[in-house]
Figure: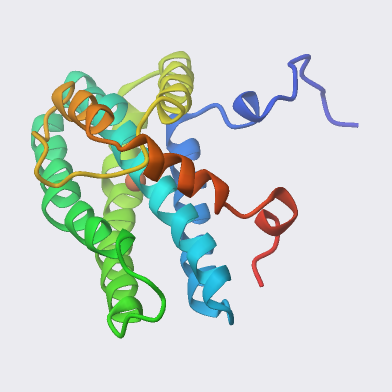
Length: 204
Ligand SMILES: [Fe+2]
């Protein structure tokens, strides 16, 4: 028998290091990308497109609010790491995300747009997992990592659905600008078109 820890098994507690939580998001994004590509019906493509756009926007903004400042605070070359990541998110990922979110599956550019976005994003994911996150984990103890993981999780639940490349890219301005410029009807429309829980579990 292995030793049991007396902790409540909530989704938040199950993953308690910030790097694990971020990697978990990355795997989810990869699954949503694959689902967009493999869906046969336009309606399904749109649902996974909305899921992907929403998750990537929340993930990117939570990284900007919680993770990049942690690089700057705890890692010796963290300022450089944060600047590189902000530039990647702002100039490449967000602009491509902004273009892609407006496209319909019947658009001839739909597939090239998501492929180009994924290529840029997966490069960023690789660098983040290989270089940045291990540096951060080395520089902080497990309590701090757990605390950042919880902040990251909480922040994701308070960010807007759309990403605005023209908004100032340094927190807290981006969050405020993003929130203020998110049209409520667009937001509600996206909620209605989300996959339900049974569809979420399937990668086919
Ligand atoms: Fe990331």
